[in-house]
Image 1 (cartoon, rainbow, N blue to C red):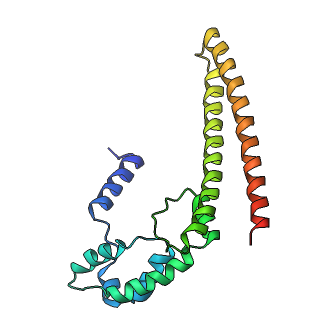
Image 2: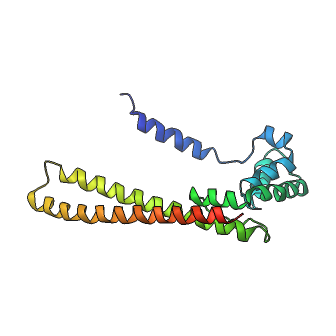
Image 3: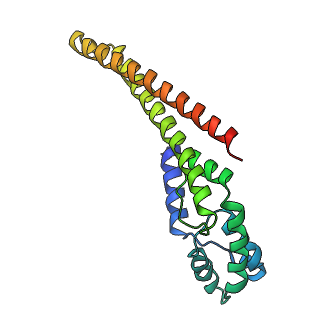
Length: 186
């Protein structure tokens, strides 16, 4: 009997999970430019502990990273990561900030990160309400829904439509306010 594609996908994912999640392969460990790798990790907002993960991956092959070069590169990469514009992007996509920015850069980064995060959360709330509306509408038109359930669903949908409009207005106000703040600030 052939296996369903979903079952095969689950099996494949389980095998991948068992293979571990080494940060670097043997070839990468042997040829690593540790300064450049540190810079890349810094530019991605990786914490200092990322070097421990690299060290652990490379230890399997008897290779030790150059910590000094790595941290020099990482520090440079953090200057690319810890910009206000990137803070906004990270917040807007809902990324978690891991407290990596140097003290001089962190306040401006965090201010814009929080603004982006507020937009992300407003958009997520709006999308959540939209999903609730879709579920209620499907139930409303389901042939198994009785008259009493339909009356409750109509009331629920009126509330959800009202919530959706309020969330849309809040999102527009937030976008407008943040757009004005962006034009005012350098």
